[in-house]
Image: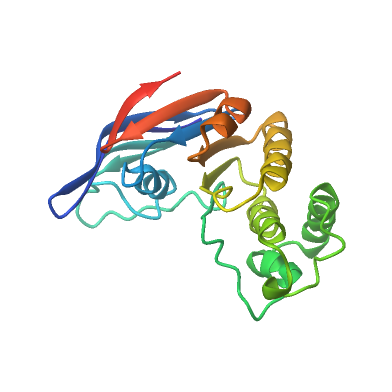
Length: 218
């Protein structure tokens, strides 16, 4: 289980997170919805420890991180057990999609990595465009690339920040199908989305975040 308890985060006088509590279970999809500026991306960055919260507790399975950290204490981030896919995707333009995916696999067992990569390419139907450069592919194809790049690391939890924001209905349905398949394999998924219908169709739990506070969940 991935959880955050009483998480706070401020940027100057702006309280981005105010005593937020959230749980992401393995084998479930949690949708995080709310208005722009409500704290959704800040929460994802805190849960993945890309940015440390000002206070609170983050638990990743049996490992607990207490904030603020005591002076002189450093932490070992839970990567790649937790991976994040951001709306911007962050694909290297001078690398093919295949090279973008395999870049994080350096210094890993090559045989296992190649097998995992082939399985994911087949599962996401990427054979026809996997060796193209990002500017030669559609947004939907780049979205799948970013997902596969995260999944090839075998995470237990994957956090998705508005990855369907610019997709058409057909591609949103494709992503939904893939997410449900990942859930069925026991991966815990937290997805930020502005698409209420998509959240209702995809999620086991919906959390509404506004003004840095959890207003409702269910």
